[in-house]
Image 1 (cartoon, rainbow, N blue to C red):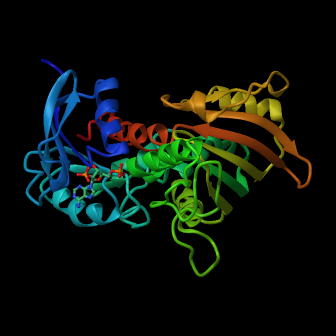
Image 2 (cartoon, rainbow, N blue to C red; image 1 turned 135 degrees about the vertical axis):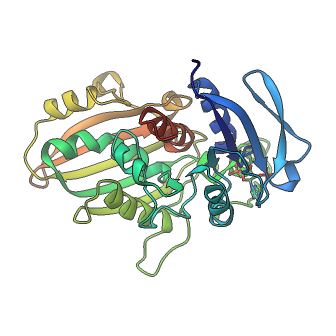
Length: 339
Ligand code: A2P
């Protein structure tokens, strides 16, 4: 008997992440019998390639999910809020990349290297965490398991692709305008992004943190199932196209040597340690871009607190931070016989 195959829909297939979801399904040979590419009415008439064939983009509607078994969503929160329940109701497992469902207690929030079993308790919708959270918890998981983590202080350096296709265009256009001596135009971001950076991702909340910062706080607690873990985040947008970087400072529950951290991380799935700073060897976004691993370097003791560690964590935000993680969640369901 041949391998079981599945009817898969990708919602937001024309977007930066959605398009990559289609590509990652192909790269990882996910057993797809039929693919349905969904986007807004604006994209009807376009085609996208999957396994060397062109497929039409269809308009997302409430009845788009008939017969669909897996629905990968990346078309923003409001689309997910409205259409993920329709997909789940018609029998699909939704893996949703937006923030719409992440903190819903009935919805598992899953990073396959960290809490794969949580996926099995879904009732139709599984949430893919925020890109910055995913790479951080992957890098911290083996340390968490070995000695516990009491507190995390993280500063991110986030690529524009996380905002979507139009933001990538805005950065490229601004660079060209400046190179040509013209005043750069600004539409997506609150400030010029070319040759600049700003600590502003998502709206600011009453507590002074941004939405992105609070996602890192709340999602980390949920993924580790540890409400006691203390997290303070500062999230910064920088003029990089693909690849988020993070300065991560932690206080562990018990002492741990840097060599042991390196050993644990080197043996952990999905992590690569790149750490020889004297030779200028440490993770950088240009090298992480286009790959699925989480890279960790600059691992060192933080002598300013008891049991302190500092490190630098880089990953491709639209791959491990979004599309790859989503497809890996589907793979968990598949390998556990839950599809
Ligand atoms: P479209 O290309 O038709 O606008 P990005 O994050 O790169 O900006 O991509 C967003 C994705 O979400 C695109 O595929 C976009 O489709 C899709 N999208 C946005 N709004 C809707 C909507 N109301 N219905 C369906 N798809 C939508």
